[in-house]
Image (cartoon, rainbow, N blue to C red):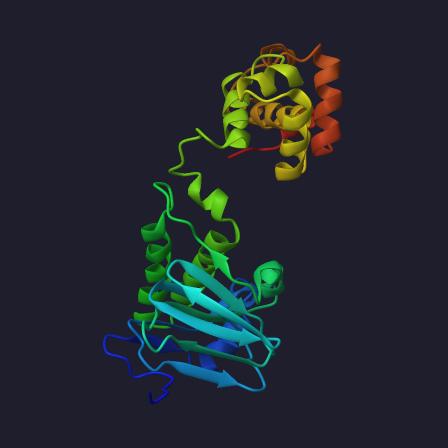
Length: 293
């Protein structure tokens, strides 16, 4: 089969000109993370790219149909439907569609001063498992937000908007679980179930045993799982949620600090203030004095 880098029926692609790339590099919003190339190749039979010196940008490829493969750092990876990978800039690589079942891919070349923040997902294969809350269409809507705005021209507003959309688009791959929370029923996810339980009981005092019981786990096992998932113990997380709620009450109500402390079941106003300072670095009264919008 003849190899080719593009020229597929129904393909779409935009390659930003060097002058626009320079503009992106010098803009304080866009220079952090921005698109240099973007496209969609449907049923890309014969698709094959090899770059012995690597690319100047990171390359995200999201396969929505068919199969393909890539090789980076001398390691071969097979790719199929609802999998994605990001090839790190500067690494020699090759990628191609399957000859028997060529892939359909959405792809973006991106870079920026903060593009290294996604390094943890570079040069690996990730699967996006199918589920009622998968939000496959929502992710593609984000892609279209970027593509269609770039297609309409390179105004500063379009460039800044697409740069900000890119953060969300890549985050939808990096933080799949969080991206799905919008549509996710909490049933079956004990961490989210526990957090929902905390939210519903934000005005109460809860023990580790009570939170663990709400998800039908032993306190010790639940505590370990929660810490591993969130980086916080359950009670520490619950305290942070209370302080977040306190901030909302300070911002948008006329409640006094003592009233807020009572409402959120702190021992007293002194205890509430001590915890507030520990978490936010300032007292509730100082926080309340600042002009909030």
